[in-house]
Image (cartoon, rainbow, N blue to C red; front, side):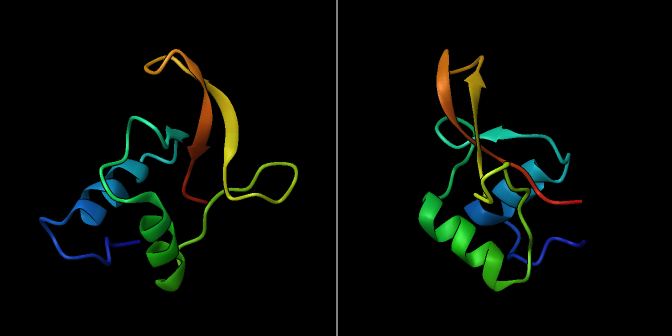
Length: 76
């Protein structure tokens, strides 16, 4: 999917980060305000990968933060 956000914005950069379809730490990898980021993505019809409990994030260890954090990923 082509990036639906305005080039040069934080949300544009965050969407580009997620286009590798890997899990990304919400604490250290995203630039945008997170509630707005993921709400705006959903409003554009962008789907996020879910964990086993149907949450739009997955708790896992972040090697950058050196702690367990929420991670998000675009759904393929």
